[in-house]
Image 1 (cartoon, helix red, strand yellow):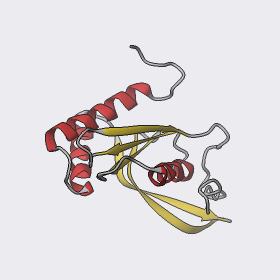
Image 2 (tube, rainbow, N blue to C red):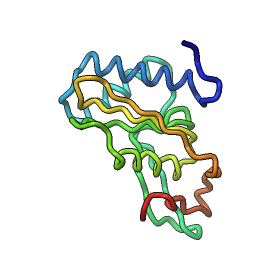
Image 3 (cartoon, one colour):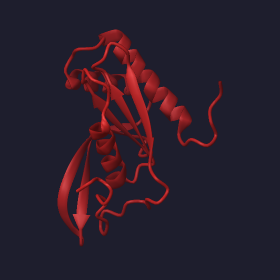
Length: 147
Protein backbone atom coordinates (compact mmCIF):
# COMPACT_ATOMS: atom_id res chain seq x y z
CA UNK A 1 0.00 0.00 0.00
CA UNK A 2 1.51 3.32 -1.12
CA UNK A 3 1.08 6.88 0.01
CA UNK A 4 -2.15 8.68 -0.83
CA UNK A 5 -1.31 11.76 -2.95
CA UNK A 6 -4.46 13.52 -1.70
CA UNK A 7 -3.26 13.71 1.90
CA UNK A 8 -0.70 16.35 2.92
CA UNK A 9 2.60 15.61 4.63
CA UNK A 10 2.38 11.84 4.29
CA UNK A 11 6.07 11.11 4.65
CA UNK A 12 6.25 13.31 7.73
CA UNK A 13 3.13 11.64 9.15
CA UNK A 14 4.68 8.22 8.54
CA UNK A 15 7.90 9.21 10.35
CA UNK A 16 6.15 10.86 13.31
CA UNK A 17 3.72 7.96 13.75
CA UNK A 18 6.65 5.56 13.49
CA UNK A 19 8.40 7.51 16.24
CA UNK A 20 5.28 7.21 18.42
CA UNK A 21 5.05 3.47 17.80
CA UNK A 22 8.72 3.08 18.66
CA UNK A 23 8.33 4.99 21.93
CA UNK A 24 5.19 3.03 22.85
CA UNK A 25 6.93 -0.27 22.14
CA UNK A 26 9.90 0.69 24.33
CA UNK A 27 8.02 2.27 27.26
CA UNK A 28 4.63 0.52 27.04
CA UNK A 29 1.49 2.16 28.42
CA UNK A 30 0.72 3.48 31.90
CA UNK A 31 3.28 6.24 32.41
CA UNK A 32 2.71 9.99 32.78
CA UNK A 33 2.31 12.07 29.64
CA UNK A 34 5.50 14.00 30.39
CA UNK A 35 7.54 10.78 30.15
CA UNK A 36 6.24 10.16 26.64
CA UNK A 37 6.88 13.80 25.71
CA UNK A 38 10.50 13.46 26.79
CA UNK A 39 10.89 10.22 24.84
CA UNK A 40 9.22 11.67 21.74
CA UNK A 41 11.48 14.70 21.89
CA UNK A 42 14.50 12.42 21.92
CA UNK A 43 13.17 10.16 19.16
CA UNK A 44 12.20 13.01 16.82
CA UNK A 45 15.67 14.51 17.27
CA UNK A 46 17.27 11.12 16.53
CA UNK A 47 15.27 10.96 13.29
CA UNK A 48 16.36 14.46 12.27
CA UNK A 49 12.81 15.84 12.34
CA UNK A 50 12.64 19.53 13.24
CA UNK A 51 10.17 20.50 15.95
CA UNK A 52 9.42 22.93 18.73
CA UNK A 53 8.35 21.40 22.02
CA UNK A 54 5.73 23.23 24.09
CA UNK A 55 5.17 25.68 21.26
CA UNK A 56 3.47 28.83 22.51
CA UNK A 57 0.57 29.81 20.25
CA UNK A 58 -0.82 33.25 21.00
CA UNK A 59 -4.37 34.30 20.18
CA UNK A 60 -4.87 37.98 19.41
CA UNK A 61 -7.97 40.10 19.15
CA UNK A 62 -7.67 43.52 17.47
CA UNK A 63 -3.91 43.21 17.75
CA UNK A 64 -3.96 42.49 21.48
CA UNK A 65 -3.10 39.13 23.06
CA UNK A 66 -6.17 37.52 24.64
CA UNK A 67 -5.00 33.96 25.18
CA UNK A 68 -2.26 31.42 24.74
CA UNK A 69 -2.06 27.71 24.10
CA UNK A 70 0.91 25.43 24.65
CA UNK A 71 1.14 22.70 22.03
CA UNK A 72 3.05 19.56 22.90
CA UNK A 73 4.93 19.81 19.59
CA UNK A 74 4.84 21.82 16.40
CA UNK A 75 6.63 19.65 13.85
CA UNK A 76 8.35 21.18 10.84
CA UNK A 77 6.01 24.20 11.10
CA UNK A 78 3.14 22.27 9.46
CA UNK A 79 2.00 19.58 11.89
CA UNK A 80 0.58 19.78 15.41
CA UNK A 81 1.53 16.74 17.49
CA UNK A 82 -0.58 16.30 20.62
CA UNK A 83 0.31 13.55 23.08
CA UNK A 84 -2.01 11.91 25.59
CA UNK A 85 -1.58 9.16 28.16
CA UNK A 86 -5.23 8.32 28.78
CA UNK A 87 -6.58 4.83 29.38
CA UNK A 88 -9.74 5.35 27.29
CA UNK A 89 -9.98 5.88 23.53
CA UNK A 90 -9.61 9.47 22.35
CA UNK A 91 -12.85 11.44 22.58
CA UNK A 92 -14.39 14.51 20.95
CA UNK A 93 -12.64 16.58 23.62
CA UNK A 94 -9.20 15.53 22.36
CA UNK A 95 -10.34 16.14 18.76
CA UNK A 96 -11.53 19.63 19.70
CA UNK A 97 -8.16 20.37 21.28
CA UNK A 98 -6.36 19.37 18.07
CA UNK A 99 -8.74 21.52 15.99
CA UNK A 100 -8.13 24.55 18.24
CA UNK A 101 -4.38 24.08 17.91
CA UNK A 102 -4.61 23.89 14.12
CA UNK A 103 -6.73 27.04 14.09
CA UNK A 104 -4.37 29.16 16.16
CA UNK A 105 -1.19 27.97 14.42
CA UNK A 106 -2.45 27.70 10.85
CA UNK A 107 -1.13 24.12 10.71
CA UNK A 108 -2.74 22.02 8.02
CA UNK A 109 -2.72 18.79 10.01
CA UNK A 110 -2.64 17.42 13.54
CA UNK A 111 -1.69 14.04 14.92
CA UNK A 112 -2.95 12.77 18.24
CA UNK A 113 -0.87 10.04 19.88
CA UNK A 114 -2.36 8.22 22.87
CA UNK A 115 0.22 6.25 24.86
CA UNK A 116 -2.16 5.31 27.67
CA UNK A 117 -3.64 2.21 26.06
CA UNK A 118 -2.11 -1.27 25.62
CA UNK A 119 -2.00 -0.70 21.84
CA UNK A 120 -0.65 2.52 20.41
CA UNK A 121 -3.54 4.78 19.32
CA UNK A 122 -3.13 7.57 16.78
CA UNK A 123 -5.45 9.86 14.85
CA UNK A 124 -4.85 12.26 11.95
CA UNK A 125 -6.92 15.42 11.62
CA UNK A 126 -6.88 17.69 8.58
CA UNK A 127 -7.73 21.37 8.79
CA UNK A 128 -10.90 22.28 6.89
CA UNK A 129 -10.21 24.07 3.61
CA UNK A 130 -12.31 27.03 4.76
CA UNK A 131 -9.61 28.01 7.26
CA UNK A 132 -7.21 30.59 5.97
CA UNK A 133 -3.64 30.87 7.21
CA UNK A 134 -3.57 32.35 10.70
CA UNK A 135 -2.45 35.95 11.08
CA UNK A 136 -1.74 36.47 14.79
CA UNK A 137 -2.07 40.25 14.44
CA UNK A 138 -5.68 40.21 13.25
CA UNK A 139 -7.34 36.83 13.71
CA UNK A 140 -9.32 35.27 16.50
CA UNK A 141 -9.52 31.65 15.34
CA UNK A 142 -11.77 30.05 17.94
CA UNK A 143 -15.03 30.24 15.99
CA UNK A 144 -15.66 26.51 15.60
CA UNK A 145 -14.74 25.25 19.06
CA UNK A 146 -18.16 25.48 20.69
CA UNK A 147 -17.43 28.57 22.76
